[in-house]
Length: 453
Image 1 (cartoon, one colour):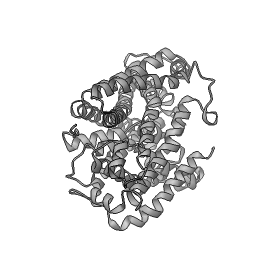
Image 2 (image 1 turned 90 degrees about the vertical axis):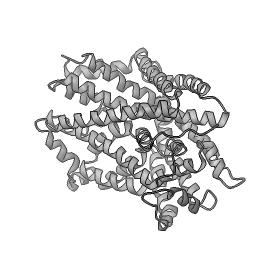
Image 3 (image 1 turned 45 degrees about the horizontal axis):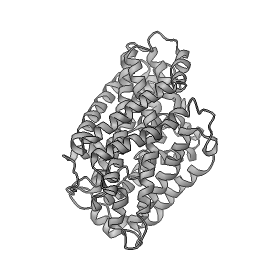
Image 4 (image 1 turned 60 degrees about the vertical axis):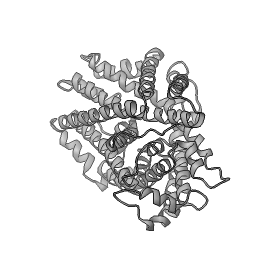
């Protein structure tokens, strides 16, 4: 079967960035920045994105582009005879499934909040009611949670059923353009709020005294983690798009562009959130509750809050759903490549599987709320722990070693693929850094994520 290709380079960049742009950017990045003192954290984040994110992204894309296959078969096409690197491909498939088992639920929360703001459900409420009536009320209602999750899954696989160009590429282009437009409108609005510039100063002006209060070591570690996890590397979520792309441009150039767009969205999300927080006297370091509890309270007190709340959660829906359909496409590609299925059969089987597999996460907040799994965590947190703390860093380490060691694909072959085309070339002299320094950095993240906090 002939391998599908992106219709345009813009399509590849927007789809790849759409996969990277997700909840980690627009939910986690702002609150982690707030917890770690603002501007100094942002500086270290950008540094580690260059040192870690770009190199590993080029490696994952290189494996995909050189093989023209999805996870398992890409290793088989490139690995030395008799080696077992392809086993990691099955862990990649499992990682994508596991990610979607909870990501579809959180994406459903975004969609649910959008419709509630659009319908005016928040209008006239007291701030305290946001906690009990909406977020806690939604989590405690398995029917409501199931509806939003099912809508997310069905819509995602419906889009993917139309194929790469007519489905994923076409819809993601519209969503990403919409996302960038929304984020610009929301940021301008937040920046014009009375007192909003204080939030910008907290966010972007480095204050080493404030960073010292959070602990410089903690700030650096948090920045390293965020820079690493923001691109969802290690489970072949990006590799499959390498298999669809042409060889006109170097992978370093494409990786820089993907990282730049991903980072732009994260940074501008902060320009929406921090000025709004300071304008209404809300602490910007309020943690994971920032999006679903703190910000709705801000919108309640804002002139035209119903509109701004609806637009914000539409932006959040686009950000999370772009990741959902990108990972669904990965599952489709693996089913088609490994089992020889038609796209229609792959759509039906994967859709049914993800629907069933997503229900434990939904029920983990209500019917199964007493269920404690890994380290006393609930269902969602346990699934997230396996993906974020184990499969992503371990998978990235495997990709790295596969590309730079003589027992894998090898540095020369990786470099030849990465530097094919026009644009920024990956310097050959970085080989010692890739072989000895970068693995240690990834191991630090892996070990740190496995140590109980």
